[in-house]
Image (cartoon, rainbow, N blue to C red; front, side, top):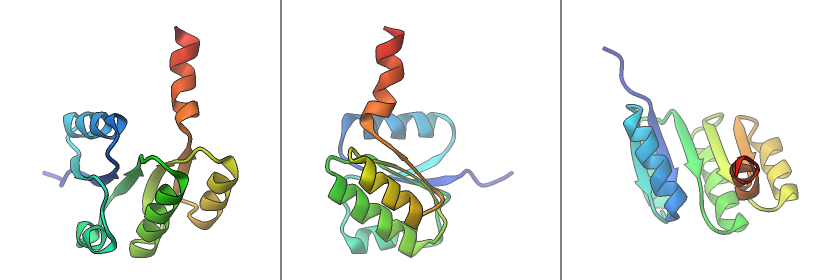
Amino acid sequence: MSTPPRVVVIGDLEATRLLCTLLTDEGVTTLHLLAPDETSLRSAFAGGVDGVAVVVRGDVAALRYALLAESLQPSVAMVVTVFDRTIGAQLASVAPHCTVTSPADVAAPSVVAA
């Protein structure tokens, strides 16, 4: 029997809670951190993680969490939401295993479908 993937999800938004529910329903071990400080995030990464999702308000907070995650476990698979495309491009260049998206990118298919 294999060990389920372990994913750290950061954020206190409703979207973050929904993401945790979806991941848990898929058998992923999820550690949800609302607004972790550096010590809490370091503890969450103890033993390694398979992925990180950062869904927070504010590009500065998202950037801070993403860069800390990258420094704790280089090349960890990561999804980060940011509004500013320039910040997103810079983050993707520093953390190549990071998928950068914006709330608009996520919402657009729903709007078009409606």
